[in-house]
Each structure stands twice: as C-alpha cells, then as structure tokens.
Image (tube, rainbow, N blue to C red; front, side, top):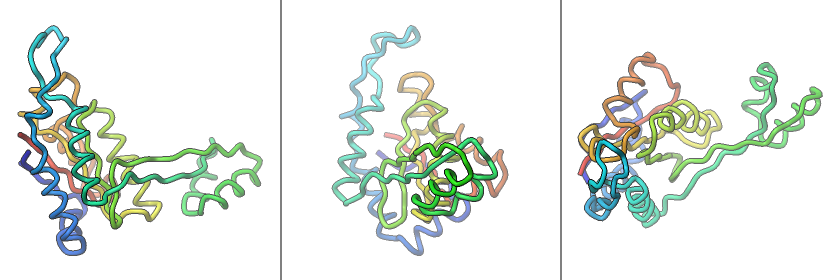
Amino acid sequence: MKIIETYSHLNGLEFLLVHRKSLWKELKEVVENVNAMDCHTKVSKEKRSEGELLYSPVEFNKCFKEGFSAFGWKEGRVDYWVSGDARLIRRTLSMDLENQKKEIEAAGKKAIRSYNQTDFTKERVAVEIQFGKYAFVAYDLFVKHLAFYIGDKIDVGVEILPMKSLQSKMSSGIAYYEGEIYNVVRQGRGVPAVPLVILGVDV
C-alpha cells in the first residue's frame, strides 16, 4: 500500500517529524508492507456489486496488526469513571481512576466504569486503522484520540483511512479520506483539540 495524502491537524505531523521520527518511519514502513492483493478476498453480496471481488476491511486490519505488532506497537486503553452529572464530570476529568470514583460517590451519584481503546500505541503515539463505517471515524477523532490526549496518555493521534479510489472497491458505507478531511476542516482549526495526523492510503 501507499500513503497518498497526509493531513496535519494542530501540528501533529510536525510533532512526529521532530520528536518521534523513528515512529513515523515505522508507520510508513507498515503501510508500505501491506500487500493489498492479500486483502482482495471479499465476494460482494450487495445488489450494486453482487459477485464482484472487493477489498476486505477485516483482512486489511489483520495485515496492519501484524505490521504494527512486529515493531512493538500495542493496543492502548484508558479507563475512567462516569456519571450523569456534567459538572461532576468536569471536576473529575483530570483525576486518577481511584479519585474519580471517590468524588462521584461522595457526591451521591452512581459511578459507572467505562473505557476507550485504541488499535496501536507506542511512545505516546496512538494509531487507529479505520476501514469501517463513517460513524467510527468521528468517534476515533472526536472521542478516542481526544480521551487519550486529555488523559495524558498520548501526544498525537494517527488515523489511517482509505482514499476514495480504494473505498470505491470496498463495501458501501465505508469512510474515506477526502470526506473525513472535509468533516475535520469544517469544524474549525482548533477542533478536535488534539494533534492528529490523518493519512489517506491506496493500493
């Protein structure tokens, strides 16, 4: 595969190039080592393309997992406690896990344990491979990466998306780079408030 487009949000790419240059090199190598033909395995059942051979998101994810794991990247997770009280959430956001729970219960509210997970992390960089439906990208960009950043677990998040040219050879409803860049730019320069690198890939 090849990286076709790169978008740097809040100097995400500049951060990688200055502070995590070796990780940027690893990331590019992982993408380049994905053999797209190994992922050209899905027989379409959709009316518009029934019987056609399409690229499989599941197979792409497997290839990326093998690539990142070989370089020591691991799944990341942030745990936290939530309640239905917005003011209480604001107060407990920056607390550690134990004190979040104590503070919520001391306020007479029920503490509910929750978490966010990301595909790969290494040296405070998180990577999400997103060959799924549109809604998942928004969740990655505006919830997952942001939660890891606010929780002081990462300095930058990376989102890998198919270009429209690749997405058109996959099942319907899958997000693509050009559309998601539009969604990010439309929010304004400071939203989401986390440094990001968004990559558009093709075969």
